[in-house]
Length: 224
Image (cartoon, rainbow, N blue to C red; front, side, top):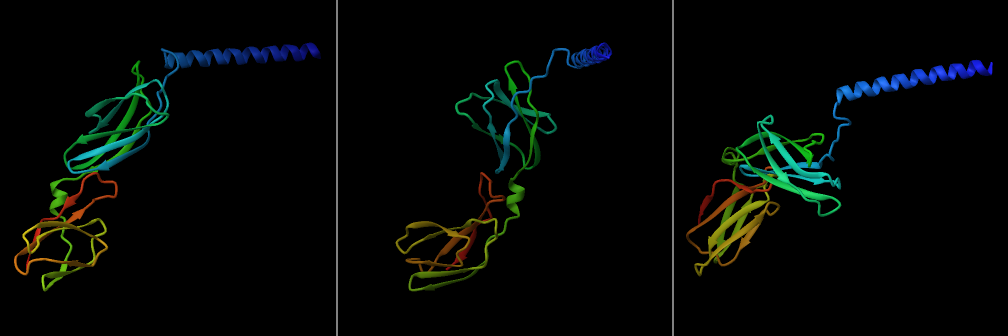
């Protein structure tokens, strides 16, 4: 009985070894240069939009083999290479692309010195421009009341994308002033304003919270 068990065990071990060798051969046929080497993938890839430009930012891990990154867009028709050097345990990489207005899909890869490429990281991003800016509306100024050189401005509710209104005027001494009116402010009091003349204002916009540029509606003149 012991001999029979030994023979069965030996046969099973031989079949397993043959299967492993065949599997290894098949893998080597599939990957003739040996095991594939993937540099570390970029982490936390983000797209921060701007005016006819966009900033891509990501974290680069501690993989010492990484020597460069490459960004692809327009279905890989366009790309740019960024050389990298490790300074910290985790490095933040930022790169700004000058692009035309519109939506984009970006792919980012890392590479080692041998040219091996990482797994893809992908992010969608919008580039804003003149077309977007041409559709922006100014915050409504309900009234402007002047009393003895002081001006009281009453505003309608602001657009949630707007951080404020940029107001420009000259005081009674002819000195120019520029003031940011926060979006949450509904009543603005200005002292020392002239009793005649004009004020100008334009409403500022951030299309998204992480935008790198501020946009503005067309400047409006207010007669005093």
